[in-house]
Length: 232
Image (cartoon, rainbow, N blue to C red; front, side, top):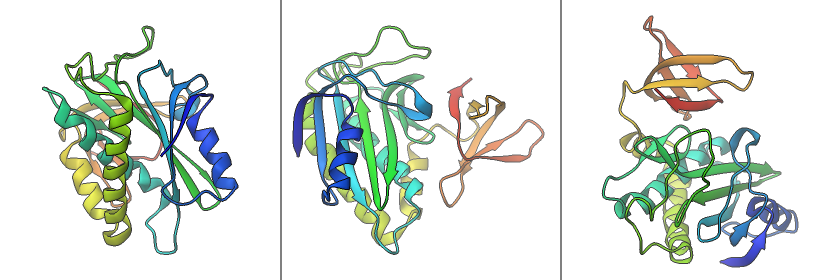
C-alpha cells in the first residue's frame, strides 16, 4: 500500500506508475487530493480525513469486459461500508454508494493500455457543503470510529476477493451481488445522458454485461450504457 500526504489525483499518479510498469494489485492512498475527478468530467472534492485511493488492475486474456470492473468495485465498497451503518447503504448504477438518497462514495475507472485504474472516494469524516445533490459521510451516519487508513486496508482485501471471483467465475456472481444490494426493482429514476437528453423510467435490472435496463412508462425496456442517474 503506497501512501502520499497530498496529490492532485491518486488516479493520475497511479496511471503514471502503471505506464512505468507497476504491478497488478498496486494500491495508492492519498491523505488529501486537490484535483480529484469524478464521472462525466466532474471534480471530486476531497477533504482531509476522507478516503482517496486507487488500485491497478492489469487485464489478462480471458478476463470479463473491462467496464464490468465498475461492478466489482461497487460490491467491494458496499461490503466495506454497509456493515458500519445503522441504516445500511445501497448501490446506484453503475457504482455510487448511497445512504437513502445521499451519496457516500463514488468510483472512477480509467484505462491506459492493459491497465485499468480504479479510483475510489469515500466520505469518511465529512463532505463538501455545496453540491447539486445530497451527500453524506460515515461519521455523519454514525460510524464515528471509521478512519481512512484502516478502511483502505480492508477495502483492498474486499476488492481482491471480488476481483478473484470476477476472474475465476465471470461477471454473473458479481452482478448477482450488485443486484442484491442495489435499489429495489421499480425504483423511479431519471437518467441524464451524455448528450444532455433525459430518460425517465423504473429500475428493472442489469443485463449480462452490467448495462442498466430501465422500464419505461409504456412498458418498453430501455438500455442505458452511460449517463448520470437521479432517484425521483
